[in-house]
Image (cartoon, rainbow, N blue to C red):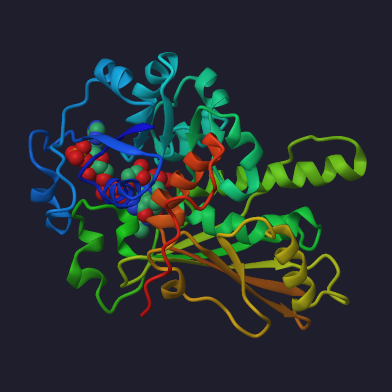
Length: 359
Ligand SMILES: NC(=O)C1=CN([C@@H]2O[C@H](COP(=O)(O)OP(=O)(O)OC[C@H]3O[C@@H](n4cnc5c(N)ncnc54)[C@H](OP(=O)(O)O)[C@@H]3O)[C@@H](O)[C@H]2O)C=CC1
Ligand SMILES: CC(=O)N[C@@H](CCC(=O)OP(=O)(O)O)C(=O)O
């Protein structure tokens, strides 16, 4: 299958290059760059020297339609919504790493991203690509809205507990921390060395664009639970508290999450572990930690794993769930390739078998 990447000199794109280059069923035929077309990719990224001989090219939708079967968008918000409709009409599958197609309610996109939304028809056609949760829909989809990095870590940690009525979704608090590569390759005051080295910064509190994305999936899960018990499936608004912090590391996201237990008198860590192990039994990229141990970002670095650990606090009646991912892998390019595998009925681990880099 022939593929192209748009947004060629960004971090998401170069991580996709690393993965697609060794994917047995994929030929990477085009890497498109808005700013550096005509340059060899090795000149932008010398770590690819003698490995990949690709010249960055200009975007031409018609020639893309003729040459490739699947396009990955690793572009900022507001770009893919302009091009995906035409690619889709011409039968090209699209996997979008940006937020353009994640929110089903166009008003939410306009409010949180401050841009006009994609066409509603295409929002409806796109599948929210949280691989482990919506795999059946992903299999039948031609447009994938790859989830944001924080929502991936948060939702993989929360949804099994919501589905099994172990926590009250209305009480969820998410404390997220990210490495600096989460902000992309562009230079900014917030992320340059002397601003972030030996520093920890809270940012976008109450304004983060991932708040409606996390709430949307929590509301879908809560509605499914309500439908199963009461025979109705009305979507109820469930606001969550979500705080983001920038940390002095390159890769990694940790979400530490708190929620009220529905049955504090009988809840145990072992019950959480047992339920999550069963929920993710056929999903090799989610690993559950044994009681009394919690994951760290280095333990998933460079890999597509999401590791999850628990603590049940009888004193407060709350559970703490810790979920870690590599933002560029499971949080972006890795999950995009996982979705490509699901869309094509291939082994979900194809091209994604690297062991995490430690230390
Ligand atoms: N970094 C992360 O951990 C994650 C990122 N994402 C999302 O993935 C997308 C890519 O992120 P990331 O790679 O980190 O970002 P980067 O800023 O590193 O790269 C984005 C690239 O898009 C291209 N670009 C910039 N502006 C435009 C434009 N107006 N039109 C077309 N292309 C443009 C540029 O490459 P060129 O000039 O070569 O075309 C740029 O390098 C974003 O939407 C981001 O939010 C999602 C999950 C995690
Ligand atoms: C550290 C850092 O700045 N991270 C980015 C997350 C990038 C991302 O996933 O955002 P999209 O939803 O736009 O794809 C942020 O917090 O905005």
